[in-house]
Length: 371
Image (cartoon, rainbow, N blue to C red; front, side):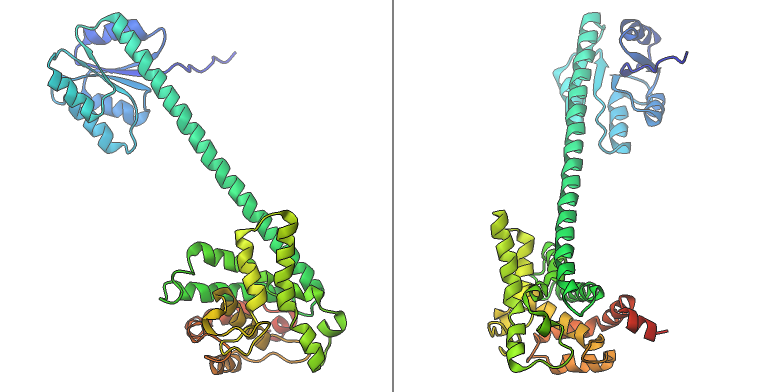
């Protein structure tokens, strides 16, 4: 039958006097596993191979005194938290103060009193056990917070993609459209991060939320009748007036969902902005409210360019795809009219990445045409 592992705490005794080591071992061996070292160098080797739970350390030793041993342990092992009890024949208060300031947990004066030795070893090990328990609890709680945060983010992602996919089933655009525009928005946001006009808004967290919300930009299309949404030809003025309602419908759908749940989710604030404002134009000629310039939310400005670019380079029922160079020229021509000029500059700075995204997530027909 295999022997059970010895789970008793380990005490390392360091003293250059064999009689002292024998006394310590005799007093403590029934309750603890005992390791011994007759000098500082050997003590450092033992600790390097396996940290004990407590160290009894003689102060006055040749070659390397106890103070130096503790200094080296602290220097070589970041976060070193093994309790050290100094053993010393010195009686001066300043010697004890120096050791405590160095980081010792306690002092025991020689000659060793068995009762004091056993009580102080037990006390320090109890303190260490409590400290280790709290650390483990804190580590567990931090891990649990991370796990629950990840779960929340996953639920958010699933909810967003479920809603986006619902809109997609009623639209002639593909699932790759929402992927591409999401990546385009991220490229623009990261390029503009640090820009004086955007640095207060485009924090790392906000960029993450904007990109997470981007797939909901056309969620309002679920409220547009099929004969308009799926029409292959050009819309009449009356039909287009109805189509334009999808921007406000998308925002209102998200607001209604929040009210139904009795909460206002921070990450959905960007979804509402994107859904409602991505058809606004820099010169005020867009819809649904004719917002102009900086009145248009930043998230909406980013999505405006991403959405238009993707529409230009992608095949639609009513049009063939345009090459990137032609789409770029149209975007540039819209600077200051359709688009925020700084957003256009950001697009030009990352246009190679736009091309890469368009190719990586091309729709089936476009992908086939590339081969």
